Image (cartoon, rainbow, N blue to C red; front, side):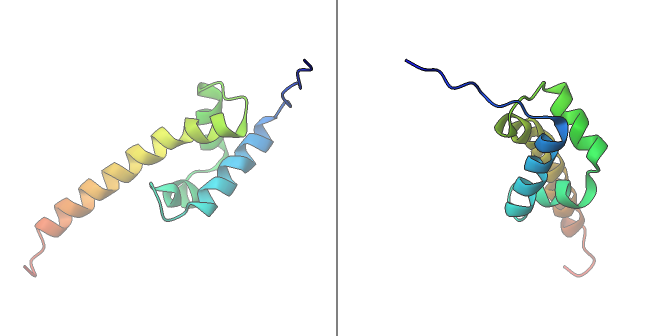
Length: 87
């Protein structure tokens, strides 16, 4: 049986994969936050900290941060709405 070697990805390719995924999924799970507010250094740090080697691993490495930020946004928005002077 022949084993096909996995391609090597550099950080730029992994970052690009994350950015493409964020744009494609802009309206779900908070990926808009990454697309609009994370700079390349933020993405590189998340990828490096997770030792991501593939685009899928890089996306998963960023997902936890994106979901956490989205949850914070939802909580903040809910809190603000519950204190609205118009209700």
